[in-house]
Amino acid sequence: MNSSQDSSFKKIDVHEAKKMIEKGDVQIIDSREADEHTEGHVPDSINIPHMETFNRLSEIETNKPVLFICKSGQRSAVALEFAIAAGLTNDLYNVEGGHDAWTESGYELD
Image 1 (cartoon, rainbow, N blue to C red):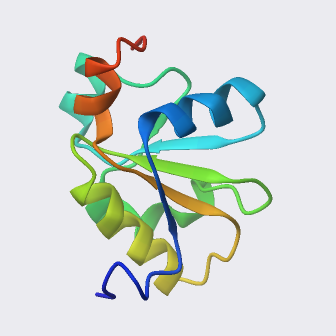
Image 2: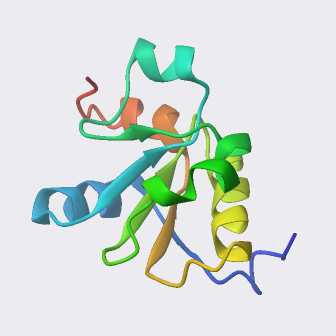
Image 3: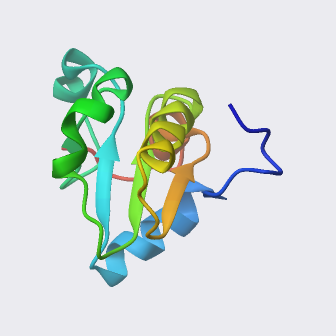
């Protein structure tokens, strides 16, 4: 896997992610397991566990920015690397701190 500096995705915090979501026209991928997603997730996020990224590439938008989020930012970074390795070239973002930081910031979950 690439080091952070060589990575072809951008890292953003939950506040930047929230602003992008409020502007609209982004896709949110929850890279956690299905049971974690069910317990609470960023509104409108699609659950694609990180190890299923390759098999579910067709569900990831290619014409808009995509935000990947997990519990803390580790699995979403792995999912992003998989997406890049599979050839996705649109704007891809890892939400640093993940759902932990999202919840700590007081942002809503579905």
